[in-house]
Image 1 (cartoon, rainbow, N blue to C red):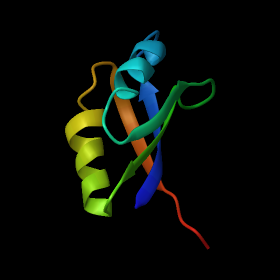
Image 2: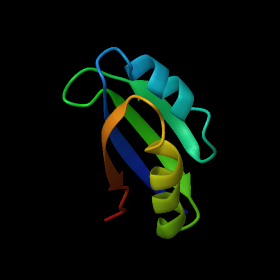
Image 3: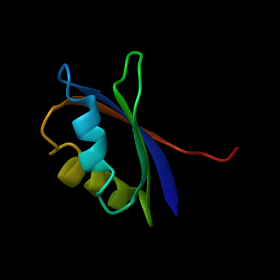
Length: 77
């Protein structure tokens, strides 16, 4: 199992809607709108890194109102 945080920047005023839509995507554990340089932070999981990448590109980045994403895989050191 691979988990990652996805940091998302949105268009002005879209953070709440983006978080709500992303929260319904399969594999998303949590989606919260936040303050700071990013507008939404998502915790997601998938069986493999490739599946995680496909989720981000095919589902998350397609959500209307997103301007930029940064995916940060969780590592256990």
